[in-house]
Amino acid sequence: MTKRRFVLVLGGANMDISATTERAVVPSDSNPGVIRCAPGGVARNVAENLARLGVDTRLLAVVGDDAYGRSLLEATQKAGVDVQGCWVLAGQTTSTYVSLHGPAGDLAVAVNDMRILECLTPERLTPHADRVRHAAVLVVDCNLSADALAWVFANRGATPVFVDAVSAFKCQRVLPWLDQVHTLKLNRQEAQALCGFAVQTDAEVERAAQWLHGQGVQQLVLSLGARGVYWSDQDAAHGWQGTVPAAVVNVTGGGDALMAGLVHGFVSHQSLEESIPFALACAALTLSAEQANHPSMSVVSVSQLLRSAAP
Image (cartoon, rainbow, N blue to C red; front, side, top):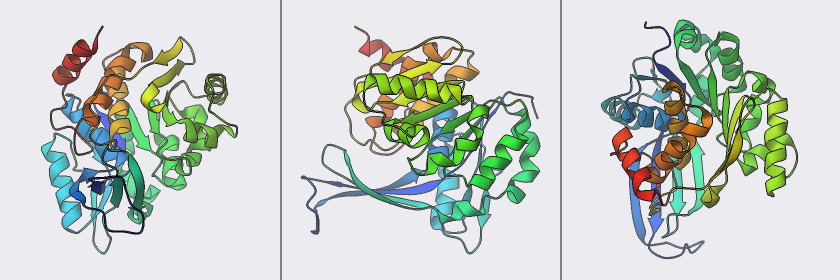
């Protein structure tokens, strides 16, 4: 095991089933549209993006011994991710995420069945403790249970941990370990859930960043949707950065690509400020794809997008 040369990603691996309507969604009725099925899940998406960006990436996730699970692992491995540590569990159903989008790609509603994540227990993770301690970066999403997160932070050693908040409900699982989080990616709703106060105005965004730094978070990136992000480094700079223009086809996966871009910048020895434009370009490229991962994601394609968007 080469010390600190690979990224280890832990969390959700889903099969994404997305439906996009031809016209505005009409509730309580049958809506004509297009239905697609593709690999997804926050951790899995981040891992695929990192591999496509040329980073040695290893995934720890659980799938069922079913068609979705086998398809997920095959597609993830084909993208360049090491999936040898993943568990295929008999009698369990692979996580599935079903989403309904309007004609502009906007999310109308989604349902997820991720009960299998309860099987990613400390007992299953324990044999991988050496991999956790030897990774250059550990990326976790808050789909993990509180017990699994506790195990991660107890066994990380000196490995920096990047956390994806996932949702306003699930992000609260990381509250006890904020002082051990290197980089936290979240949105307004997730920031509000963690901080306990409104995060709407610019002043409130900055207040939330300072509160999170006060809890020990070293770096954070707060997604502001179409406006871009607010980023802050506890020991250095902070600022606002607008989005990279993109023809939005599907909003699913944009945040996962943003996280992958941040991790890529870190392992490339860039500061947070330096990595933000590249990460936003990763997100923009992903938004132009029908699935949660752009098949042409690469350092070259992201760099070309950045250059074309430059004034």
